[in-house]
Length: 598
Image 1 (cartoon, rainbow, N blue to C red):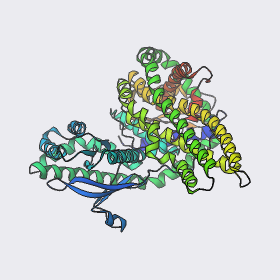
Image 2: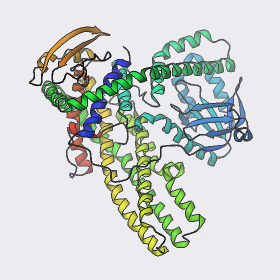
Image 3: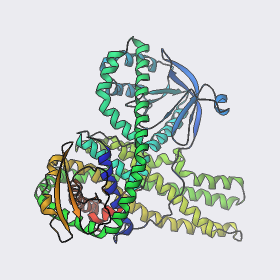
């Protein structure tokens, strides 16, 4: 089974969703707040640390810098950094988990390192448990060498913890934040690929190359551990650090290979997207009509098994899962509102005190920087972090392993909303504040602007919360229902496509072309349009339209499951959020849910 055929099919599906949203009659409600034009980033942080490195491992003083793109660099001293010298080392923070407790960190080492490498763990443990290490910062990665730092004070540890957590989240959610159809297609393709291989681990964090590397390394892990045990000689520190060097080397090689493969695929992807867009835009109405007909027929076949499945585990778990999700999301959005109000209060006080003071200018700058201030934004992130264990326990009972992505999603939602509310306030304030106003009049104008922005924030918060909960409940429940129904790739491909293709729209020929990697490939000639004559690259799954591979039986099965789930989710959200929310259908969802802002 290869990844690229799945990716090609998901590109078609994601593009159909994007164009449906753009041209469809049921567009999602527009945001009231202006979209911030500032790209997500990390506030640069730097300072002295001590690092565990060398062979044998020893603690060494260093000067460390966290860059705005979430990359960490360390130098032998501050002057070397300021003069532009080459760092002793550097690492993108993608995939790392940060610990500030030695015992908690060491307890997890055995889950990632082979038990037979006990001397590695013992060597590192002895160094980490030294009394001189008072305030550690320990970064653990499933496929790379861990990074062990320490600082002298609790205050410094907190500042570095907030900065590093922001860098990890920035790197991990780069695809989730993207609004491009290709980003959504890539993540969906990874999930389909993992499901078919029986893997339920969440490996969708990072860039496309980093995600693909994680998927490949997870598959290589058993063999890699066996090779590590067989080939590494020595004992104690020598073997431990040789092991970490090997893991880093393998990770670097796989990442380079994945990056090269994706770059090589880029021209084909661009050509495929252009051809798909022409076809979908030309035949959108017919494609959606046929999709609805096929979903209706499959829905009748699945209604009984689906209702039985939903009446069982899903109905029992959905209320608690919904309320557990609503709690951190609601708390994060309320914290955004509180933080915004306090920021405006500070501006108003400074304006009344001295409208031309440098301090007022600093307050305005600080207000604009609030979304990227880790200390201030911690109030918006804290509830999501605290609810992580409860969310994990509930979600994992349904086979979902993406709690880390979920928590990051809540935090990204809060940060994006804060960025939008700040951008909107500054834009409106700039329009109404003129040199002719005295300080009292200017303060009154700021109060009016605050009221307008709070109304917009309330509207966008409610809509964002609803979409976010819908999206994540579907992500949690859809794979569970799919597995409960026993919808394997083989059973999906046995769908009676010949019956489905009998329609007045001209879907007249179904032909089995053979088996590839265990999957039946079915092409149906779409007679409504003869615009595409060139045969498309090999696609994954059973295609229902030649040249327009957006309708596959697997995709239609997924739509039917989501439609049934959305009805359940909609009723649950009405009870939790109020009866004023209108019902959500699959057509709404296809046009409103994307990988970017939820």
